[in-house]
Every structure is written in C-alpha cells, then in structure tokens.
Length: 352
Image (cartoon, rainbow, N blue to C red; front, side, top):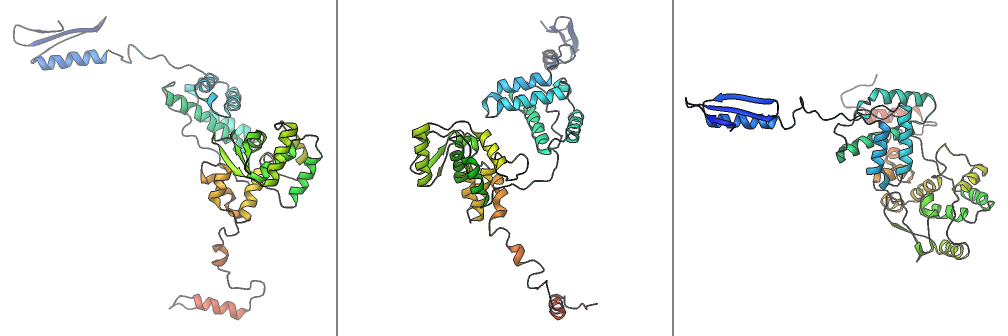
C-alpha cells in the first residue's frame, strides 16, 4: 500500500505515481498522509517538467489554410480572404505563427504604405490576420492568445462617398446603351432603383421579381430582403427574362462604360457608385435613415449613418445657433455689432 502505519503510531507514505518518480514521507496523522499522496499523484498527471506539450511549430500559411478548413469556407468571401492572407504570410517570410510579432507586421505595413498601398486595404489585411488567430483560439486549435491583439489599425483621413448627380445619371445610362451587353443597363437600373450591390442585382431570377418588388437572396449578410420597384421597371425586367433569360456577367462592361462616359470618380468607388447614388438621393429627398438601413440591408445603423449628412434637416441647428446668426457679415454696421456685443456682455464687466 502507499500508506502504512508504523510501530510508533505514525503514518508512512510510499508512492510512485510514475515509474522513476517515487515519494516517501512520514506524517503524524493518516489525513496528512492521504493529502500528501493525492497531491503527489495530481502533480504527476501532466507536469510541465517531465511531460511538456509539444510546441506548435505551424507556420502562418498553415494556420491560414487551417482557418479556411474550419471556418473560412463558410463565409461569402472566404476564398478571396484566404488568398489575401497567404500573400501576407509570404510577405512576412511565413514565420512560425506562435512566434509572429507585432513588430514584423508593422514593418510590413510601413513598406506597403511607402509602396502606395491604401491604408484601408492595409487595415483590412490586418483584421483578416487577427481573425485567423482569434477563430482558431476560440475553436481550441491553438493554445496561445493572438500575438497581434495589441496591434492597432492605421488612422487615416476618411474619404467622402462619391455618387452620381442628377445630370450624370442619364449620361451614364446613355453610355451603357452603347454596349452590346443586353444586361448591363437593366442591372444598373435595378441598382439605382433599389440600392442593391451589383452582384445582388446581377443574380436576380424571374421568380424573384413579382408584385412590383424584387427579392435579393445572394446578399453579403446572408439575409433575404425585398425592395419595392416601379411597375415600369418590373415590366422591363419581365420582358428581358422572357426574351434573354437571366442576366449575364456584365460588371466589366459597366466599368468600361463608366470610364468612357467621362464621369470622374475616386479610385475604388466605381463598383459601388450606383448603391451610393441611391442612398445619397434617398436622403437628399427627405428619406428616413432607418428605412434606408432596411433597404440597403445594413446590419448596423453605423454603416447607414454615412449618408445622414445628406439629409436636408441634418445638423441644421448649426445654422440656427452659430455665433454669426443674425449678422449681415457682408456689410454689418459697426453700431449693430456693438449693440449685440453689449447685449451679450456679462453684467458687472466693462468693455475695453
């Protein structure tokens, strides 16, 4: 037995939980001996000194592929994100993931900035890489915390969203008419009329257009949403589907037409200009921001608030309550200025 009584009334512990690891000790009471035995056995179950867990030597690229197998395959942009992450891993030298440091990522970020990469794109790649570590840690595939958790994204000047003015819309539609594609103009009209993304409008089928509504099912948020349309647009959509079938891929034709129309847009906003145009005109015409959120399918109102400043009533208090209100700043008489100054002067103070 591990615990035995001695002739002098004491209790002797002689335990060997693991071969080669033997513990012997004598105690006054049996309870103390039992606690000592239990402690010795517990400490030998998985002690770090003699049975350490093998270190995770997988490289960043291996974790990226593991992330895709466990999680990334189920998200809309999973393949594209994996390709981006593999490129990032290659630029980092594909180090062992557990030894990846924030300094290495910052150094890569600096090089990308100096080479002309957009800060927003760099931040996106950082968030993708963080998500790999966070998701694998949540799933228990790695046992160390995210080595990039303290790394902050770049701060950059937010660019205003570009949209088409009222006189530019017919200019664009005319350019689209010049294309041989039978789908490009109608897809563009659906985007302008509903605020849909190009891929959502392009994926419409005849059964999704009915009762003066269109239903989008291939959405970014994976949620189905329905938006009303005019009777005229519904008729033209029905005629197109009856004659030509479903829309063909025509985003390239749209981009060429936009370029040839002479309309100048900031870099990177061409594919979303129709969605921005719908949202901007919706707010300019007095639309409700919460209704716009539902139409665009935003899960958070924060995204929709980018268009709030276009509302005619947005922050109008700035005009009513600014310090120049009531003054004719073009030719204000000196007496009127002095009178208003005296009126606002605190009691008990004198003017210089």
